[in-house]
Length: 239
Image (cartoon, rainbow, N blue to C red; front, side, top):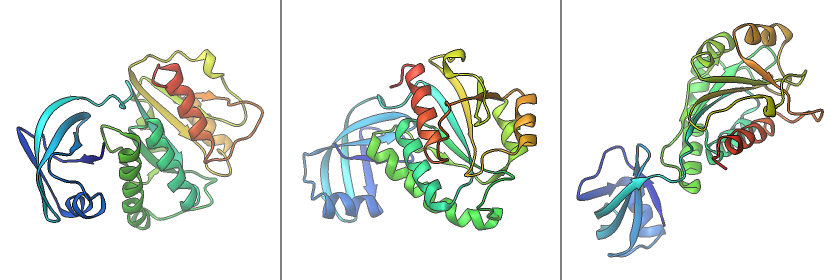
């Protein structure tokens, strides 16, 4: 069933306009009486089309329910900035797997070193990728792509989570040694192509971030978040 995100809580009726209306009318060629889903704030609203044209689609709201695709755990991915094409892949897959927020982090070993104002232009594209991935995977929210942040600010934010983890190529605990609740918040920090600087890793550990070891095979920076998020979702009963 087609899914569209809206920025308001629908009542007995709802209206879709703009690009989504054109997509419904012209690309999907939907007709009066057909069903689609509206999503707002983690709730799905199941609707039938009452009237349709490329400018406006009016819907009758039949029922609602919490989005079944939303995980019970609130996972934020703190991703050291790789080259842009890799970051696009990471955003897409992290959203599909259930991340609720993605924070790009500038670390010492990042090969790509955009300025904050330069990254803002790229963030719009990353947000669009997150939106499309959320639609495709049936998510109940569109995960936020946060502004570019520094390593120390990222660590300070991670400390607010119930569990803060860092995938570290030089060793750490196995996931089987970590206690994860089926609800609550998890922060996950992943390095860039060059991994983490030793001083950065020590700073994170001293701040309470737990280093996690994914095994003796060194994973690419775009593979590590997919593997780690998958394990976390499995451990918390969300896979």
